Amino acid sequence: MRVGVITFPGSLDDRDAMRAIRLAGAEPVALWHGTHDLMGVDAIVLPGGFSYGDYLRCGAIAANSPIMAEVIDAANSGMPVLGICNGFQILVETHLLPGGLVRNDHGDFIRRDQRLRVESTDSAWTSGFEPGQEITIPLKNGEGGFIADEETLDRLEGEGLIAFRYLDVNPNGSLRDIAGLRNERGNVVGLMPHPEHAVEPGFGPDTPAAMRSGIDGLTFFTSILTATLASA
Amino acid sequence: MPTIVVEVMPKPELLDPAGKAVAGALHRLGHDHVTDVRIGKRFELSVDTVDDELLKSIEKVAADMLSNSVIETVLSVEVLDESPAGETH
Image (cartoon, rainbow over all chains, first blue to last red; front, side, top):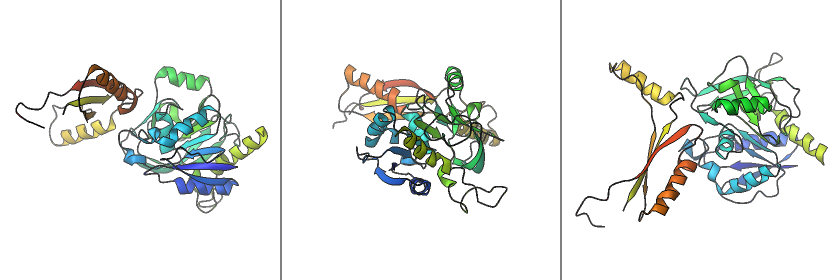
C-alpha cells in the first residue's frame, strides 16, 4: 500500500509522517503541494506544521494549493485522508470536515503528551482501536480550539462523527472536548494531536511500563492497511 | 489605481485571545477605561479598474477565502477613494 504525504511550504512533520507509514508496513510517497499529481497513492496524510506561516488563517492558503483539488476529489471518492494538526486545519478550511480551529483559549502554544478517548472506530484511520480506548499521543499547537455552532456540534455528536475527545484536561478550549473528527463516510479523519510522534518505542510518550515507550499512534497507520485489505 | 478594502472580524460570540491579551496589557498600563479589545483584519486589494462585476467577484473572494464564515464575519467590501487630485500615474 502506498500512502502519500503532502509537503506544503512550512510543513514540519512530513518526514515523521512518512516514517510512521514505513514503520506501519506501508510505502510512504512524498507529494508536493504545487503539483496536481497524487502519484497513484492509496491514501493521503496532510502533515502538521505551519504552512504559509499560518498567514491569513491556519491552513487557509494550503487549502487552496494546486494539489488540494485532487485531494478533495479523492476524498469525495472514498480515499482515506488523514489530517494531523495543520493538516486538520487544512481539512476544515477545505470543508471536508466541519467547524473551525481558533487560537487556544489561554493564548499560549501548548506541548504535552495528551490522553484521548477514541470515540469512533468507524473510520479508515481508527478501525484498529477498541471503541472507547484511551490513548496517549503528543499534542503541540497554538491554534487548536475546535469550534462550531450548536447545531453542528449536536449533529456531530448524534451521527457519531466525533473521532477523539480530550481526557483529563481540555488543553485549548475545544468545544465539547473535541480533539478530532471523521466524515460521514469514515475515510476522512482530522485531529490536532500527533499520532506520527508515537510510533516507535524509545521516541514516544512515557507509559507506566517504561519511559518514552508509547506507540499508540501506530494504530492510525496500521488501521488503513487492515481496512484496505479487508475491502480488497 | 483603485483599491478595494475588505474588513473581517472574528465573530462577536467567539473568544478572541489575541484581543484579550492586548486588553490585559492596556489595563496594566493604566487604561482601565478600555473594557474590551477585538482584533480583526483589513485587506487592501489593488485593482486596475472597478466595476460592479469585479466588486461582486471580490465579495465572493471575501466570503470564500479572505474569511472563514465559521469563525469570522466580513464587515465591509468597499472601494477606497480615488487617488488625491492632481496625482498622475
